Length: 485
Image 1: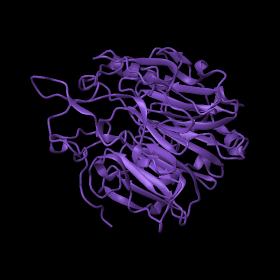
Image 2: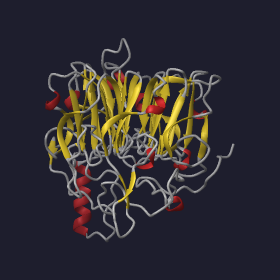
Image 3: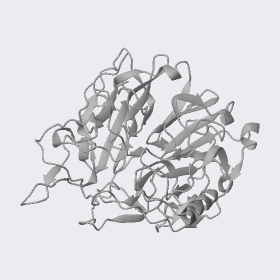
Image 4: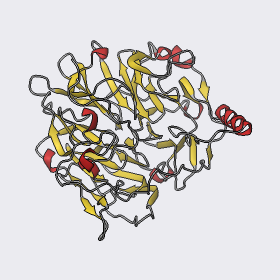
């Protein structure tokens, strides 16, 4: 979720931190012992695709005024828009999620020619798909449409033949102002109403069902019916929604009235309703009321956590699990580490977070590729928020987090920014490495063990009561129940 800037913003420069070897980010290597030759080849590859441990300028974008930056909790690619409304994408492209009409990996920001003549004002990335919004309220999507997540109203995927929309296609929505993507679903914000399409597992589409069915006559193989036609979420029909943020399998929506609603996968307390239970439709988070109304324009969701800002203070609140150790936070609590900061924007990747506040940029979380931006001598990961010292004193307008990387949209022209290293990949576009085989069969829906119907307990390593399957990207939780105070 990222949209064009607030009034008065004239555009800025994009800085980048994190991994540049898009084919390998967040993908483990082979378990077999490497030969000396293989080790040498791996070392040479790392030199060709270096992790950027501190924020760098991107040579291909120098002098281009950027209006917004976007990625997503499940996205290993990025989306940005310039002052002329041109859309650029780069990163992993195995399903056509970059929208360039092919499956070639792009290592540099590349203009999406299929959106020529349109002014793109917002964008978001899912695991294998992307969505953008234009100034006239239309939305275009590209990438995998296996579960209908592109929202075109049709579904051509059959059995193991996955539909790949490699060039921008018009989604069946109108009057849109923003968009957010989960792993395999999309949420559109249109005139204060929310529309969704894609994979309904965990109830993440918000339509009070997970569209579960048995795909076998002689045995039990439970699947989830793909939903390619965007539908309005009726549980929010009487609210004016101002912001929508998606984690990999859950959603947080904020309203003009100061309320927060969550739904989808309830594991780790990420929905903030005290119990680890999936919610098939939006449920009001009781912590936020007339006494502590939420600010209408700031929210972020990672794989297992949710964040927003309340109007009193203002103060950041968080719930779920954002540290690799310790208990889950089962309901929203004030995030003490950011107390006193004037937070302007926030974003979350799968397991890391970024905040633009005052004249500082703050990051934290579990990282593997330098996406926290702390530099070669800095920490690799950080359980607690810390400043990106290379950007201290720099006005960061927006942040965006994806898997293994972070984007910083900063005010251009400062001495600190001018002094940063300039990065240019050796190759602009290329064939990606073969995609690792999935642990299980490619799902049209995701199979699971038989269980009783109704609301199931949320994913927690093993399927709870045989009902839910854990997210592929998250570890099993070590504790249940209310977090220690």
